[in-house]
Length: 362
Image 1 (cartoon, rainbow, N blue to C red):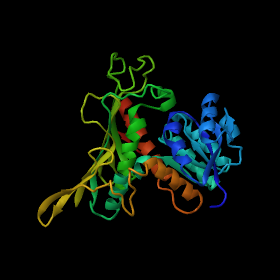
Image 2 (cartoon, one colour):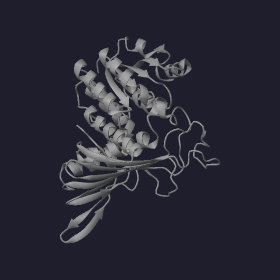
Image 3 (cartoon, one colour):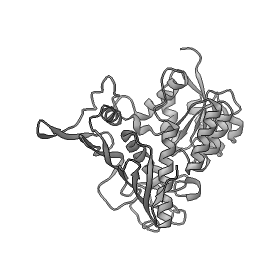
Image 4 (cartoon, rainbow, N blue to C red):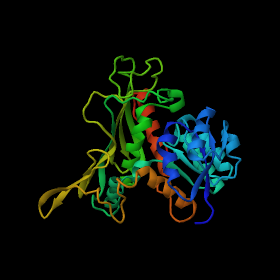
């Protein structure tokens, strides 16, 4: 196996504990040797649990990137994604940055420029691409089963599941609410399936309808009405340069029973595809003059697809990044693709504020 890859973690809070650290721990050829958090106790805790208390602990990411590391994972609030990623790349480290890539398109472009200058790898944490249903659908799209995909819906809807911890409700640190938090996953998945990254214009609306509610019935308890400065729902209408249309629906607290997150609906000239919910897929079309639908069985796994019961999407994501660093595979999430997701989200927010469609210049 050779020498283990050495990782540094910047940001040891929820997304680190819930996603990245457990997945990295399963990799035999990777060790985490540096932990950083503005709250030292969180870094200390992560070091004990995932570094065997042998790693170094930092409060300032500028010190961590000076360490002898192969890669840095940026798992901080959205407002600091760009600066930390650029610093790590400039220090000669490969980088995985959590989604969304950045608060705005300008920052995303700066990250790509730093990557190009460094010659290192940069990927973004869109783990939903690695789900079994997503991998299967991507293969169908790439093989031409759906034909020309000209209409799609990107959906990320919660009924009453507003995250009340961390800085999720802070517009300055996050750049937005459900649109940039969970809508970003649905949009990334949709653009990836369509293989279409050329937006023409976007029209959007954002709502602050439930921010001041009390006795909310929220999954994680009532939110602090004074701190809830981001939108509770956001919707977008996106037209691509080839005239394809995407409808984006995102909400943390919508009065609906149609609760689905990080899923897409695709309509092509030959067939269509629906994800009733994450992990499920229905293909529809016409064959021999008859309409048909079929649903692949993802419980049994397969040669090209992963059994969700035995390997989580986050685990596949972590392994894919490590293999790319070793030159044994390629990145599955390209920074250029993630930057377009950020570009469109920014366009929707700008449109919502202006009340007019936002046309993309490049």
